[in-house]
Image 1 (tube, helix red, strand yellow):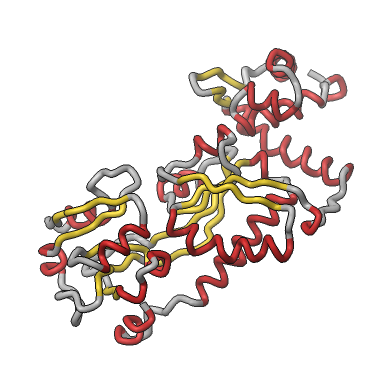
Image 2 (image 1 turned 135 degrees about the vertical axis):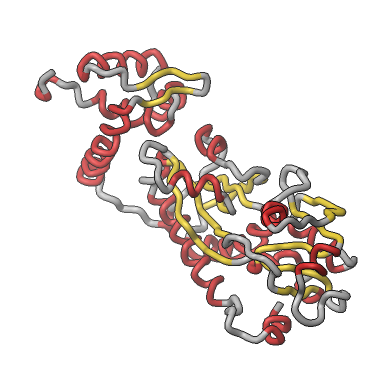
Length: 326
């Protein structure tokens, strides 16, 4: 193969297929027919002497050669696009609709500030919220069901940190901690919470799937302990209401206590055992990475995250002061 005879349009098709991991979606993105995309990939295979993409039940899987080639192709196309079509994005005139997936508590905390920013800076931008019922939002992003997911996705974030061929991009917005939450005047509200007292209490678990087992139970099992989960719910708002009006205790990310709508009726205590930090990550698809409107949205969420972190109490504060804030 000679580079001089290579049809560079084939690289554009290759980039779209690698981004979408699906021939039909790539065809829609390129305004081409699916047979035309298949034919272009076939010609590129013949030119490069590699299969490049292998069909699977869910789309296509890149070969090692394709994964090694794609970053260079993507970078070159992005540079050409920037040179040929210089950015003239004016957020005040932008017309865009974004579908976002968040848990109810995250949405309750972030959406009011986001809406104020849209009203002030981008009156043509619309937000459509989609329920987030999973810790694995990548299929939704790959199918194009959503444009952005914000939440706690521990397995996904860890995997993406070392993957090179995934079209899913991610950014950490916030790192915080889990705490034990209970109503004021709860029998366990006074003093330091012991592991024995914690395990003897009746518990509420926030579980998107309804499965009565979570990170806390895994940590307790390593200590040879267990707890009784009396109730599982799938919303943080519901969790706050129930805990505020019962003797159940729950474990929540500290920054989400305010979103329960019952923060004035609740207090929190440090966990009597160790849990990993809770992270708030933002996930999106490579196809949207170059969109100026999408970049504006992500930048706005970054700013909101920075502002939210400044309002949180620090660990060095006394427990009495933290109780008053909580």
